[in-house]
Length: 319
Image 1 (spheres, helix red, strand yellow):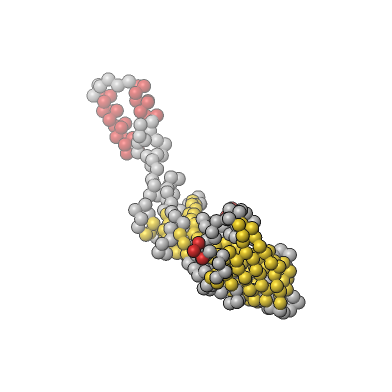
Image 2 (cartoon, helix red, strand yellow):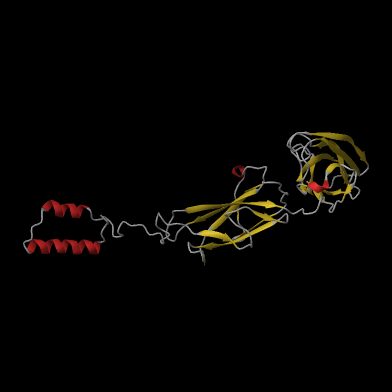
């Protein structure tokens, strides 16, 4: 039976008394049963989903103001920085004022978001994430926006988390790129620049490359070079290609890395990592220097034709 308010309680007792006075037959057990079903409080015992102090109150949602950004589906951005802006909405989708307190965390495709710490949102309902890496295939950045709310005249904290994914396609011209573009120190004090190829088409018939990397030899010294040709790599996606690799040529301020593939593997397309170069800082390292993909770099087809490189990337090495 639905709980009764105090006003209903009074009317019920009055009705019972009237029945008794009128001589109607009603048992004591019936009267006691009905009284036992009355609530101890005056709020009907029912929940109120519109009352923020109610335990069953449902927090409102958020939506992005940015065109094309969504919490429901992964979205793509075309630069290495993203600003997320949002507003609070009710169940009907209308914007409302609501005093959420926000924090956020994010993780690149190689990272586990559970290992990341939440950061406070300094600007209300807006965050900016910089120095994003290029993503490939079905790899995504993941993010979480944590929102908490304490109702007025209450100490009970209510909270909810909004999650989403996005990819980064900032490099849209065929060629080499640094990924990431900001290179920080490894745990041993060295610096590793990882170089990718991107926007390769099947029709390019790519089978070889010569990467010329320009660096400042006063500040950095080359200590290691690796070319990625293992099964599952960009140069050898199905494991049937054979990597042909020439030892790098290192001269003052330049390093040339040449490699090719042979075999019956699939035609290369898309993008992925091809090599990495590790540097050791010299005693003259000022804490920041730049690396450049030099315009003498070359891509070759199986017929020996040059494939146009449309963009030459650069990166910053920072302490």
